[in-house]
Amino acid sequence: MDKRARLFRHDVARASPCVAVWATAKARATSTHSRQRTKSPTRGKSSRSAATATATATATATATDHVGGRRYAPPVADERVTKSVVDRLIKALAAQLNTGETVVFTPETLDHLHGMNPGQPVEFLDMIRALASDDQHVEKLLHRMSDEIAAEVGLSAPSSAAHQWLGTFISILAEQVGASRTAALVPDAVAALTGLSRAEACEFFAEAGSFVHYDRDQRVLDLIRNVARSQPREARLGPGDRVKLTPDLVPGPHLFDPDWHFFVVFVGDDGTVDVQPELVMECTIQRFPTSALTRA
Image (cartoon, rainbow, N blue to C red; front, side, top):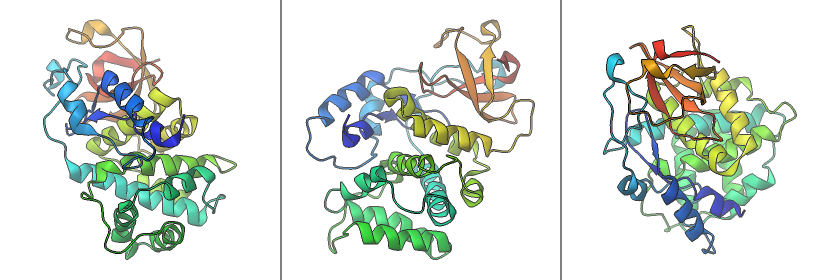
């Protein structure tokens, strides 16, 4: 599948401080439409608003006794959370390229950089430039990216919303990490991605999970595992742990298969845990009472 068409498949209804709702039918329709285009308007861009209109999930209370594993569909996304995740990914990418085994751009990364539409390079480079003054790795990354893509003066995209680039930076980081012999994040990249807040964790794992769920992207799956392992563990369960659910302890109606296994995304201090199903089944993040989960 063409890389540009592939990145268009991640149509998500945004919002929640924590949980994304995935509209599968809309994503498939968008993918079909994108294959008919000769150029994608934004690489890795997620069209959240369209999917929001198709989502029918019901918001669930967050109190422990009332969390039912339903999909959340709050009306407004927090762009600040997305920007924070994108900034972390930029810093991790910069560290990976400057101190890791693979210090050159992979062919897949070059495909991203050379396939932008007019105006997009300005927006893309501006997101990196905003962090360059405080981070030497990012400053070097900016120079290297600038050498690869032509940012025409006077041209700019109409919006610099971070969510339009989240998928692109996830994909590029996954490709660069996957090209190394160990397929592991370097220490400085781990430092950039460790300590995700609940909102950040849900944002990252939901977006990255869509690449695996829809496209079976092994390198993104490896990145997900790397990021999960980099998170601190402060409870009996931690990010990346494989768990199973006790359906009787979760209020219905259920929007999941009781036989599914889940992976921990975030352990809250309110008696709840955010989990993601095995990505071959689904990529939606759901919240359950801690008491309803056991190690698989």
